[in-house]
Length: 148
Image 1: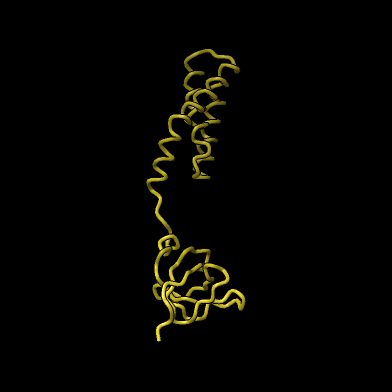
Image 2: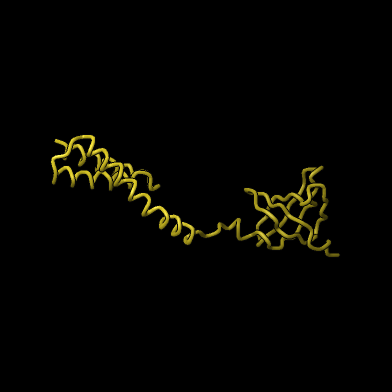
């Protein structure tokens, strides 16, 4: 009977992992599988089975988590927004926080823009540097004045 309980627990934890795809319950699935094997091989009481489940889940978590974190960081790729920081853009509408105006063109795309520092006014035709991307708005600082 105990073997069936752990088999069902393994399937449920595995199904939860597949449904979430967030590495939330994989350690519990492995713990349930280890407990299933031990309860099939040995006559263990419920307390011993729970101990094996908790211990094996914890050990698997401790062993794999650093590897997963390292791999996750290695696979990180900046979004397009992150890649735009530091690039130059051209002001197509005066950037003025007091008036609530400001548009720039970056790589052929029209963006809303705010000045850095906030009280700066950047004239149309100026070249600006992208300091930060905040959704569909760029925070920009003056790089050079308007072209005449």
